[in-house]
Amino acid sequence: MHARALPAPMGLFMVWLLAMSLGSLPESATALDFSGDRIVKRGKSVVMAHVNAKEDRWRFEFPIPQRGASVIIVRVDRGTAWLIFSKRRLYLEEPIANDYRLEVSEKMPGEVSREFLGDEMLNGYPTELFEVTVAENGETRQYYRWVTKVQRFSMKTVSKQGEWSEEFRRLVFTEQSRFLFELPQRLDPANPPSTMQPTSNHQ
Image (cartoon, rainbow, N blue to C red; front, top):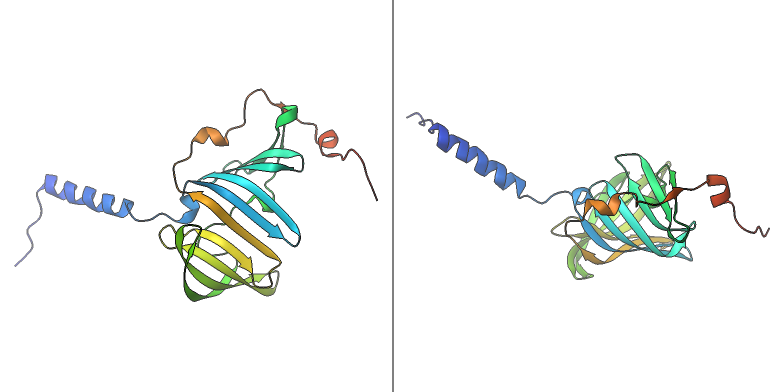
């Protein structure tokens, strides 16, 4: 017997139902809206920031200013970053630096292999722990990477040698306002030479 074609309204309903079911599948971590505290350690250096993220737009607020900026807004869609000097009501526009690129998806850039090590609760989220091998500048490096089971978000990454780590704490996956990623009004453009020139030079 041949399957009977569905009536047009029923056929449209089935297409809609399929689209809805596919749309309910978890998104990749790079498309998730979230906020949280980011801690990056490199040797003895520790940089903390509160992060808001929406798709390809990120906002960093620093308790200790970085390069004089208390806020950095990254707009990948524009290929630019705004460094905001709040006390002086100035901003500086420049290309996106690697330090302000978020790589929070399950896989690491340059990843060549991974080994599952086990399950672990981390910062309130069930995660899977992996040992990841990455090719960087013709060399291979190993990292430990904790990935949330539901969102497939990289909660924590630590180099196997221990000289570098990145971790998110107080993480909340919730929709972020687009206004967080716009340049505030009543800011003047900074003059790069005078803004970036150190006030004193000890050599």
